Image (cartoon, rainbow, N blue to C red; front, top):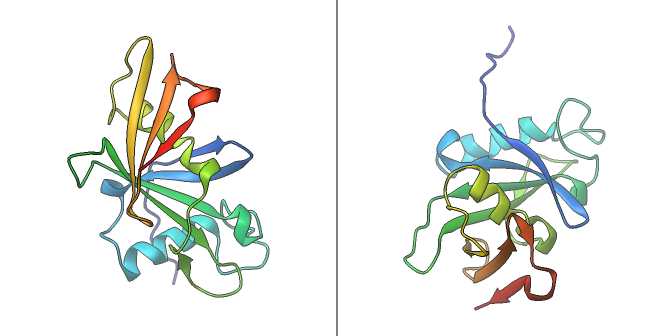
Length: 152
C-alpha cells in the first residue's frame, strides 16, 4: 500500500554558508508528532543517505526553518529552527543556526509576511527555539553586512 502524496510549498534557500528547507507553518500540521513526521519525510529521514529527501546526509546539513506570523507584538515573524536526525526519527529543536537565521528576512519578504522598505528593511525575528528576538537589516533585499544582527 503506497502512501498518499501531498503538496507542501517550500523554498530551498541558502543562508550564509548553510542551506535549509524553509516552510510556512500554515502549510503544516500544528507542532507535534504529525508535523515532525512530515518534516522527516521532507528531509528523507531517518536514513543515513537521506536519498529520498532534501537532507544532506548529516545532521548539520539537514536543516529546516518554519516561519509563522508573529506570536508577540515585538516581532514581525516567528522562526522555528529544526534539524532532522539521520539515524533515528527525530527533529531537534534545541538549537538555532545563525546562517539559516540570516535568510529568514528575505524569505519573510518573498512570502509576503513583511513588506520591503526603502532604503533599509528591518525584520524583527522571534526565534521560538530560544525565545530571543533579533533584528535583520537589509538594503533593497541584500543583507547589510556591517549591521546584520542585533539580538535582544
